Image (tube, rainbow, N blue to C red; front, side, top):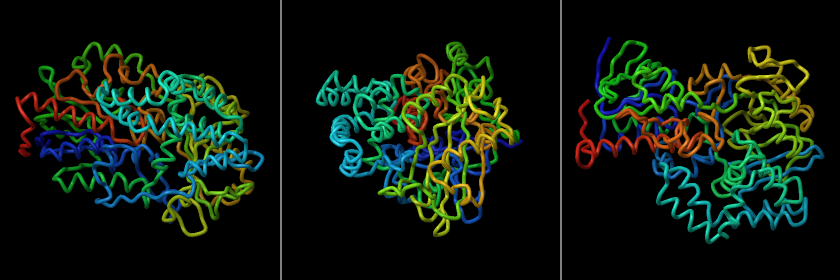
Length: 535
C-alpha cells in the first residue's frame, strides 16, 4: 500500500474530468487524475481497432458543443495539438426518393436548398436563424453555466424580449415534432429540425425537444459539427497535454473503489491497488451519479436527501453502435449537392417520432432512427484515399419489454443479439445506398455491455449521464434541489454528465465542479485561493 497527498484528486479522465483538472492546475493546485481505463478520454477516444489504417471514434465523434463552449475555447487547445476539421455540409438526411435535406454552414445555402424542395421553407428557415441571432449566444451561456445562471439568464431574458417576447418563448417550448410541422411545409426542413432534436432522449412530442433541435441545427450553422483531426482521441490528448504541462499527474489503470469521508468532509481516495491518496482541498468526481452515491461512498456518508432522490434517478436509453470500414465511399442512390459529415436515417418525421417513442416505452424499434457519420468525408486522415470510415448508432431501451421487429430480440444484448440488430441497422442504410454491404471491409458492433465495459460511466450504454428530459434537468439534476456541482459532502463535487447541464462534450459539468471547488476553498481559507503547491 502506498500513500500520497494532493490538493485535489479528479476521479475519471473523461473530458469533464480533464477540464476540471486543468482549471485547478491553472490555480496552482497539485492535482492527480485517476482513470480506470488504460487511456484517458472517457467517451472521447479513437483507435484503429476496426481495421488497420482506419481511425474510428469509439464513442462520440462530432463536437458542436465543444466548439461553442466558452470553457473549451478558453483552454486554447489549438496550442496543444487540437485541429478542427469540417465536412462540406454539416448534416444530411437522405430520403427514399433520392432527395437530400442538407444543413450547410452557410444559412443562405441551406435556405436555397430547402426552398427548392418546398417554396417558402427557405424564408421560414431564415426566420428561425433570425431568432437564433437574438438568443443563441445567451442561451448557450445560460445552459453551460452553474444553475441558477443569474447573469446569463438575465441576458437571455433581454434577448427573448427583443426576439418577440412570449412568442419566442412559446417557440422554444414547442415540441420538436410540432415545431417542424407548424413551421415548414416540406419534409426536408422538418427532418433537419426533428433529426437534430433526436440527438437527445427527449420524445419529439415533449417540451424541451424543440429547443434541442433548434440548438443543434443553429450551432451547425455557427460553429459547424467539427471533428478533431486524427480522431476524437486528439481532443482528449490536447486536454491531457495541457494539464501535464502545468504539473498535473495522470494515472491510468487506477480504478477508484472508495472515497473516505470524515466529519462530513472528503479526506481521501482509495484505489483498487489499495493506494490511499490524501486530499487536502477537493475531489472532483467525473463519475456517473449512481456510481458515486451507490458505490464510491459509504451509504452512511450520503446525505439523506440525496439518497432519497437517487432512488428515482433515471438513466437515458442504451446504445448500439456499428462501425464500418468501407473499401469505397457510401454508394448513395443520389449524391448530395454537398457531402455531409453527419447523416440521419428515418423515412419521415412520423417514423422518427415512433422509433424514439418505442424506445421510451421499452420497445426495440423495427425501424430504428440512426445517427451516423462519414468520418473520412469530414477528416481525410481517417482512412486511405478512396475509402470511408463510417459509423451509426441508435438507442435501445434500458429495460426491454418486446421487439417490434421480426427478430424476437429480448434485450440480452449478447454477441448474437447485437449482430442481428446491427444487421437491421445496416439494412436501413442499404435501402438508401444500394451496395453498401458489398463495400464493407470490416464491421464492429458495440452494444450496451461493451459500452459500459469500455467506460463505466456509460451504464447500460447510456451515453448522456441520465435522461435529458425536463424532469431531470436544471435544479432536478441529478436529484431535486441540486442543480449544482455540490454533493452535500464538503470538498466533494460532481463533475460528470450526471450533473447540470448534462450530456454532451462541452466540459461544462467539469468546469462547474472545478470552479465550485475553487470558490469553496477560497471561503474555507478566508481569502483568495492561495495557489499552494504542497504535493
